[in-house]
Image (tube, rainbow, N blue to C red; front, side, top):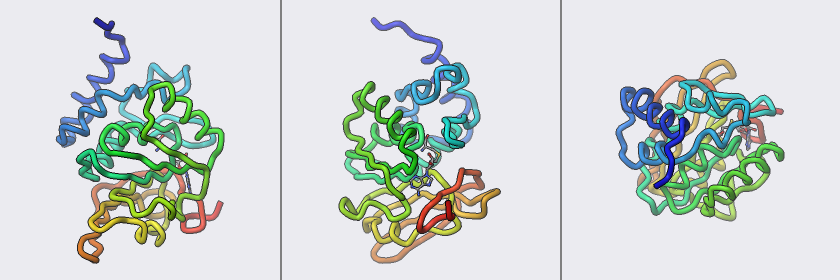
Length: 217
Ligand code: SAH
């Protein structure tokens, strides 16, 4: 029998109070949110706040998204366990970790070396071995590994990067915040029989996507 910690209790409350009442209903997404220890992805001093209803700083001017936003973006991909998913903006690694419980393999790209090094330590500690990562400009995607059944972008740019649209499988789903630097629309992009359908899920605020097909750094 393993002991139940305050973190476990707070994580369950997060699901019951922040996710379910706001319409997160996909059982697999809720199970992943109940499983992944979010507190391990933030600095020690911030662990007590890890399950709060807000984003948190992770260093380098970046943030780990609010739990609800992570769940909303994850649910929108409608994963069934067999997909290969590309994430742009590893940051703390938390979103990649959640995705890794729901698909076959996660490919995640980060542009800040120190953040990726820290995230990799946590992946190893948790033995999440189906996450592969690299340092690069994620706006050009990961051409060698394309196409991807799902693409999730966790930083916001002025438009959908063309290489990511090209690297999306058919059928495939991409979730990406697009807009100006103050506020953005979270868009669900679906590719089906050669057609691209775009719809807005929610208004959001993300850090900048910096790169060749994003904002200039
Ligand atoms: N998914 C992360 C959120 C981190 S914030 C988490 O769960 O913690 C967004 C991240 O995107 C930042 O770490 C930032 O450095 C990164 N980023 C911004 N532009 C990028 C680009 N062109 N390629 C890769 N990463 C980028």
